[in-house]
Image (cartoon, rainbow, N blue to C red; front, side, top):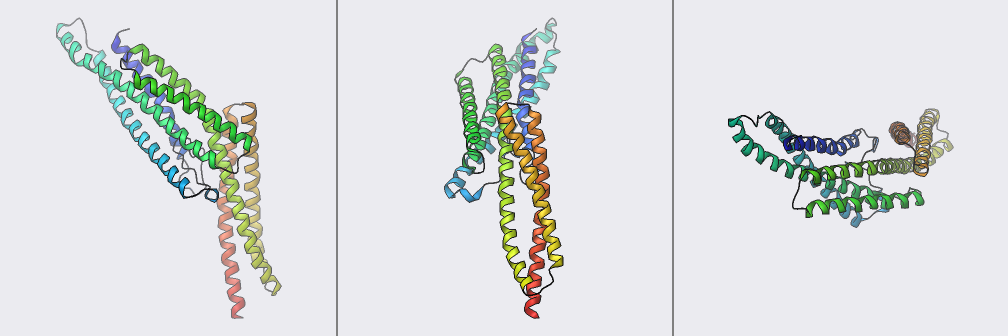
Length: 326
């Protein structure tokens, strides 16, 4: 196999490897803007995970913003290098058609194609570096979110942080090795691609679990806040009832709210149990997918519960105004 063909294969290989975090970032944004919260993984790399503001302060938000900015820059560099890789892949495919036996073609082979081959090795190295850095910044962001989350089981939290830190350390070693290596040849790149692929395979399950648990934790937080708001309006309903106001319609709204919130909590618990099982037994990724389906159902029900609660507050307010007029 000639060296141009090897470089082309390297480029195609690194494009496949680098497409994995990009695909994960896409799934991360799947539910952005739907009003449910985190989505299927809202965050494995995009990580638009809602802050648990009740336990963080201004310093945290400043640090978190810096982490998010670093992630954004890493993603932009990653996407720019990836685009360059696609162009080089097309150029090298054309270069392979050059016939080295043809005297005219040989000149072209020794100039344009040789330069293209040298450039391709650098671009492959750059793309591997930007892919690794992209993953690294995503890991740092997930680590920061888990670190301040107060709804996660302490043992699970400690274990996740340790595993994520282990992946951060491993990625740093690979990136430092790539940065310090001045001579980049095909064999080195092949080894590096395999190493990056293995890093991804090691990283993906823990990242998926981490984001699913954070999503579940946030759902728990939202349910608790909705229940607290419900208790506040219940006091006002009791006051209306004590003044002989007909609360039949208000009670129906309250029952609908309770139905949605209870169903949301039931699905959240099912998801949490599956995620703990995955963590403890090292089960397949199908368990995380199933848990995320429960999370998604819970978010939809929370969305409905919020709507009913808003309507409930409105009806109670109208009833109170009516009582004042009468």
